[in-house]
Amino acid sequence: MRTWQVADGVRLAGDTWGPPSGPLVVLLHGGGQTRHAWGATGELLGKTGYFAVAYDARGHGDSDWSPDGDYSQDALVRDLKCVVDSLGASQPVLVGASLGGGTSLVATGERHLDARALILVDIVPYAEPAGVARIHTFMQQYSNGFGSLAEVADAISQYRPTQPRPRNLHGLAKNVRLREDGRYRWHWDPQFLATPPDLRTSHARFSACARNLDRPTLLVRGGSSDVVSEAGVREFLELCPHSEYVNVADAGHMVAGDRNDVFGQAAIQFLARNAPVALTGDTAGKRRLGATGYGRCP
Image (cartoon, rainbow, N blue to C red; front, top):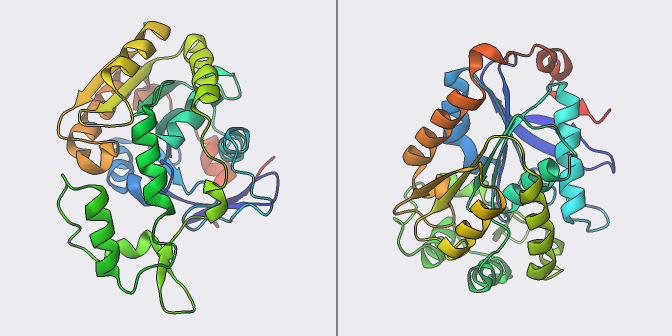
């Protein structure tokens, strides 16, 4: 596990795969997820020669909770910029799902980062309100926690009824924390959900960012997603006409988790064309990362 301390003192926890001299690919998870959602993708990228980095967003997983409850879009973008700057790499590829996709879109569209390429996973400017509401309802449930990992698996199965029930209960321990009262609770800071999403404001901001995109962009939608509709995809493609689009059948909002085989193949093919390993090696990341894997924002 690597750690980075960002500008306001929050410590971010992350994992890396592949040679630090390879092209940097930063993987950003969705709201309520952790860096472990990218485990299979990170391993694939690392084996292909990329230097893949996935970190827990503030308030999630093993990263610190924000001391003042700042989980704004701007805070998430600042965190991303700090991680990239601390690695010393130029022009990273950003791969973001849902919340992480919004962070990637704003960071690139508003020129906070000079990204080489962008992969947006089930995120477009217009999000379906019903799908967003379902996510927030799920995240706000079970405030009393769970008595066992089996109960956690039951809750996830109810939220994702079309996917097989998780078999590896031990793996679910990455998604919860065992508290002093002996009950498991979700890993995220409840303050993350304190402010309801303002879909109108985010639509305007994301649309402006999409218009500004001038780097290779791939949009990946889950074929059965209730957050991103085909209408939302069409709007994005009109805003960003040079982008490529892949619709992954039998996948919901959590595309990489539902059909990682299809997603991984699409991502590797896109990167091979737009950020090939042989042309974008960078040794600065290795120098900055150091032996301990601890980084601080410049």
